[in-house]
Image (cartoon, rainbow, N blue to C red; front, side, top):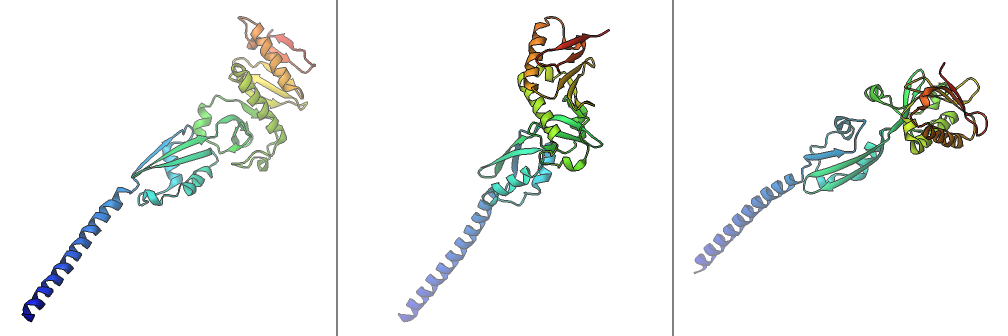
Length: 252
């Protein structure tokens, strides 16, 4: 009788051990498959205009072995925002295996034409030279400003007070007189340290002077609206240095 009991207990133990091992193997396989579900394999990027998707993937680096629960949003956002062209990067997780990256790029408002060309945005932040963008960009050129390279730290606002003033002028024009902004070829500082605009269609010169620039732009806008069928480029010179007067000289 005792032998039968011992034999039965042994069979039960063997059964329990076998069952436990089987469950462990099944759980291991299930967990392995479950973990693979979270392997990051779907990344979408939106909002990029200047930089290509491949540029952003190079910044992010290899994330093939990263699982979405372990993907650190803050770290990767910082990686992206360390690039001078990126003003903000918003990353969101979409389980089980997808992330979305929404990029807000800095938009150049002008090209600084020194010994080395720079792009600059409306906040006067210096952006890296981007040949493909510059070749097709329809934005004004800034010339005649201090060319010292240390005034233009990449990814930071320029230290040049005059360039900051020039950017503020361009931003005001773009916001309030966009048609005129699109006609600007160049904004320069002349020999008398005055702001001067040269238009693209005809090399019409618009001398803004040194002060009351916003007031003068509004006067210029009203003058342009009053021309009817004529254009600002029908004039060789628009001189606004004399108070609230506009002196116009036609082409000879």
